Length: 122
Image (cartoon, rainbow, N blue to C red; front, side):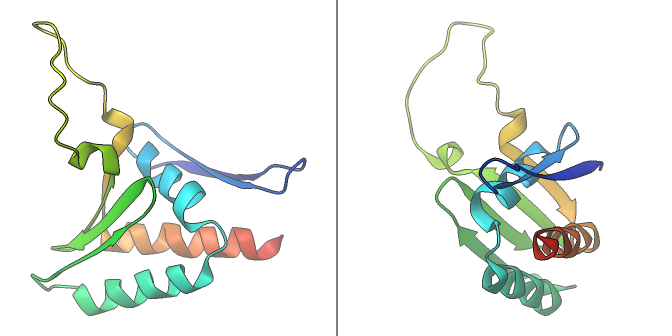
């Protein structure tokens, strides 16, 4: 999983860009976490508590939800949970590749620590 963090010099916002298959992780860091150090601490604490456990922890954000279970971090766009009955034409499907990302606890914690270090520098 490749990623890059950037700071917008015009408005001071932070952005995380991830390789294909992990774009939702970048969106989660950018849109839900930002400089929320309390959230980062809470997630790291939960990672430690849930390691090798069958329990689940979930954090529902405004646009994305983080679920931790079975040593995997799952990020999903909240719209995937809706029960919208919209039907598509035959052989068509919604594009949701950028709406879901999964990674192991170790990789997820490393990314979270790297994000913390990045936003702390500025």
